[in-house]
Image 1 (tube, rainbow, N blue to C red):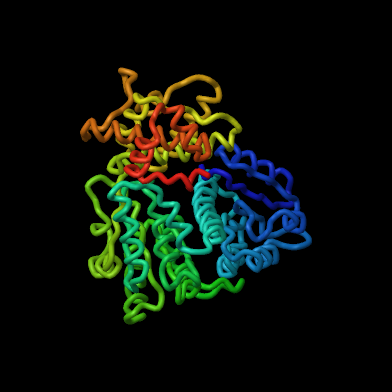
Image 2 (cartoon, rainbow, N blue to C red; image 1 turned 90 degrees about the horizontal axis):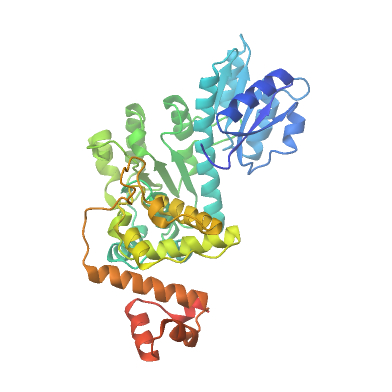
Length: 444
């Protein structure tokens, strides 16, 4: 379930409000119910952290007037309309105004849950995109989010800086959880379009009909522009590009060809293909694929990033320890080796989860990092390890770097305190800090 997304339910009939709320709550959603549109508008603002399910026929402000008001506040808010028998033309009109979709009474609860899940996914992406845009005032900020000193990360940052200045469309692929969306934002933030719109949409979050309307129009009666127009002059980021239906692939290709060269609007396509043995090239028509893949970035898996794993784990553990008000768990040499040897099929996203759970375990005084790395079907109670070997020297250096980094952070850059704790002479500590790219000013 999409974490943190609410569902506002608006219906003047108490039984209907209760039954919808109860069903969605059982499906894992956080719901809040309102008896009228007027009451709901007191809580639902432009950045409402959720989606809306509203009846069309209500006393006072009806569903259509309510929808128009919501669209004027936030045209990206997903609103699912509930209509009675015979009101389908009104529901179709609501779609033109900007509704996400509609349900006809009596509706199938599973259909409602499916719609809510897709709408919540779209809303989460919109809210994340807005939060990121507010946070990032320039490209240097987002580049700092690409943490790591491994050769593959150094090369990735160089590629972003190079391709960010170019005009060609870009295809980003890589394993799940490697940070493809962050890289898309970075490409926009470091380029000449940084001050213009960055518009993002998931091709998997909508039905074909709704995606066509979102991408290509027409302009809704609520004034919401199709995304190709909203992104004009900026960047249009198409998540899950492999899910783009064939008819829409043809329309996207026409849009790209009509722009000429250089392109007025840059397309960044992100592939999240999970099917074994298939590539994005297999899922797209060849002419579109080669237009989008004029420039391509493949993100490295976490297991190929060496000591970055320990650096990321340390930073994340510190953040979660601060959030939960407890001490940062200390990592032993054995645990560091286990982190370095884990296969990380979920990549950075999985590492984030492991770091949070490690902090929670440490707060309770129980559990080990090894237990968090076990597979569900492991019978020997041993952490899952990758078969890709590394020289012993890499493990030793990674742990040594992490140890110095942690100690410097804990002592806020006090060289004397670090020397005393690690029993190192000043010259040796200086040499090791220089070797691992650690600078005292970063800890002050």
